[in-house]
Amino acid sequence: MADKDGFKVAKDYQIEVPFANNSKSFYVKGANNLDWGMKKHLANIFDAKSGNTVMFAFDHGYFMGSVAGLERMDLLIPILAPHIDVMMCTRGALRTCVPPIGNKAVVLRVSSGSSMLNDDLSHEIVAVNIEDAIRCNADCMAVQAFIGADGQLESIRNLSNVINEGLRYSIPTMGVVAVGKDMERTDRYFKLATRTLAEIGVNIVKTYYCENFEEVVAACPVPIVVAGGQKLPEDEALTMAYRAISAGAHGLDMGRNIFQSKQPVSMAESIRLIVHHKATDKEAYEFYQDSIHK
Ligand code: 5RP
Image 1: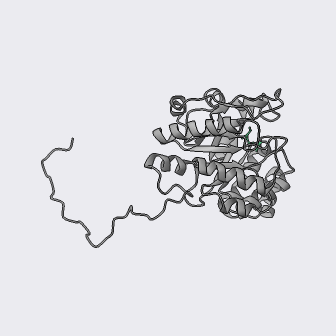
Image 2: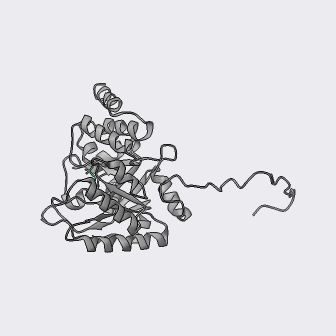
């Protein structure tokens, strides 16, 4: 405790200056009325300057087992970490393969229940409770949402339970729009799915890019990050990234298009150029080609 000696009487109140922290809006879409802790977690995810994020998804193992390119997360993650903003992974991957150092945000996959052996992937449970999400220092909890599938009600129950717990402990929730084999990848479907998740109360939505994506973004009152989906040629993946950001997405949450790229680091950096530095897909692809030929 400071001592009393030399105490100086306060006098500079600058009464003509309005209270500085009265900002009308917090830069993350739809988060203005959230608690300080929720905002801090969202600020850990979305860059204050660009408003966007490069999320690296490596949670595939929870239902796909070992995926090409992710055979050795323990070797890949330390190499990629400096080039991404957020790690999206399971608690198993986090505890075994992610060094607890540095300042990377974590989006923790908390739902589970599927495997590649299932025909119907749409039935999941909440596998990670809020206490373990807190122990993992999660900035956000990710829950799969099967809107329009057989497991719809279960996934809405899972989402609602995680949102309720997240609000109690100020940890945001991300709804992950699943697109099972029977689901259409149209703006009609994605408008329904993304808006449904936002109305249920998620703070971030992850979905896939589609035509008329501007309308999907406009109708969703929380930030959308776009998953990459199956591996594309790097130029096509960067064009999809560019179109998504141009349409108002607040980031990419790519997995296979980074870890199955010939040069994951170069790909991550190329995506960064689009997400944070307003580069076009052409500029980003030129960067990618230059960097792989170095
Ligand atoms: C897997 C997921 C992935 O996080 C999501 O699909 C992003 O990865 P990719 O870009 O490889 O599709 O939800 O269940």
